[in-house]
Image (cartoon, rainbow over all chains, first blue to last red; front, side, top):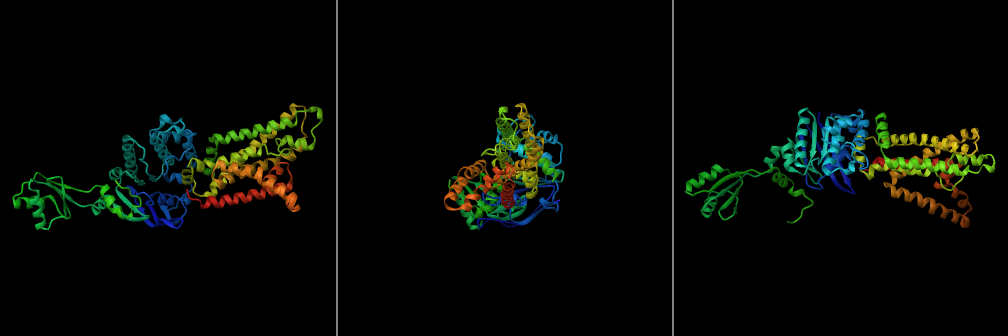
Length: 303
Length: 242
């Protein structure tokens, strides 16, 4: 069953953080939730979970979170890795939520094992590194073995092994038909984990759909060519209305637009121009993301 | 509700500062009672002294010895949400905020009640140890209102915690009212208004203190203040963003 969000809306002091947002998160896949800082990702997740009061409705398999008798048996959420009392042990922290989920106290040890924190079960969570805190937060979300996971930046602070583990873990969950909404700034991670994306900008949806469609939609095919006769080649491109292109290095051109390597190779052969390199270059998720959100980024620095 | 009660009971069970304050309430109450009953040469306990013994000295003193630590314990019990950002996790476990608040108040009552019983029992034993056995009929008469007052103290603490959002602010509000606001009103009443002078004792702290002396009028006032504070906290928590 899907997560369905309809007309989510929230304003802080008259400024809209989220504006009339509607989307579905399908089961059996990981849906990436992307957007620049201040785009409303966290507010949207909190609206979905009734942590923030605002307009709209979110259902999880047809039910709102406040209609669920034991919400943790249906929904698991990681919103803030620091959401734990540092003076309480990891096991004691998880036992609180095991009780809420109607699970036995021993469930705390099971999820600690699941996230690789068995060795730290009796330690105060205040002694935990950021990565361990992330794992503890994930363990709390998993206590009720939920159908739906809402994860806000769960990979923050994880080491490469931890990120790999998280990816495998989420894949295993979706293979079981569960539903995962994953927000992350680590686009490489999203690229490897998510099947669909929802991209936000200034509280509104910029685009949503399959990850590969998103990359295609907001990317440009580029061809890199190097030649000892780069000036002649540039003249030929202009004469044949191919481009635009920019110079790269002393002997290279980066050609963008509706163009491919075969066209450039044929053109160079026709004019007898020697080539030292001819390669195509597709945009990454990062480039597509930057392109898609360029007009909606509130915080930008200068290099 | 039962799962929320279980969650809250487990949370409170492992909240150390809460138990430090509860222990302090118990210890201070027993010590104060012992202090009242230390001189057997003064003869059998009078009704007033018996009440002072049973209420941990609260009915005879300026400070509610047992109630005050329990008030701060009530505040600590709810402030974990903001201090340690636990609200985001707790509210996913129980998104119905009124239910969550009710569960917290019930758990606090479930702690305050046996603590009050234990304090009364220990205070009575300490009096007996000094050779001054309290009148059993007075014990029964005092028990219900004293225990009810202690429960209200923990609830007021919880309400103040919800309203102020920090332990420091809760302590500040209590001390400001107790040490500055109410004495000033009383002084002002002496000079400017008979009505104010007569009713200064019915301000929140005065009413709470006198309710521990089992004054029915003070208990009514204290209950009214507690209800107003709890209603304010409920309105705030229902609409707060986390």
